[in-house]
Image (cartoon, rainbow, N blue to C red; front, top):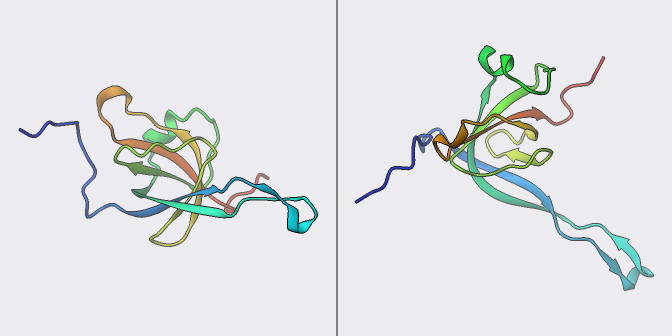
Length: 122
């Protein structure tokens, strides 16, 4: 018998996204012992980026928003605050700003994200 784990996003809505991480840096003896930073690594996951609505903005912890703020939904993929990911649909890079929780109701996760390089304070 199949167990229910709460609502899930429809498969046809999801597409591949890539969490951007870095390999661990190291000291390179061939370059005189200089430290070389790790190369970027992209780890795939499934999700969808959606626009923020008035209800989301009303309960936001951060207190400010820009036109570049969106939200991303995943079926349980955990993203950390400050993490970056690339949307495989349009190659836009986003930074995770805040988790918008549903509580312990189900495994679906949603986050407030901001387009990288898109907004500047006045």
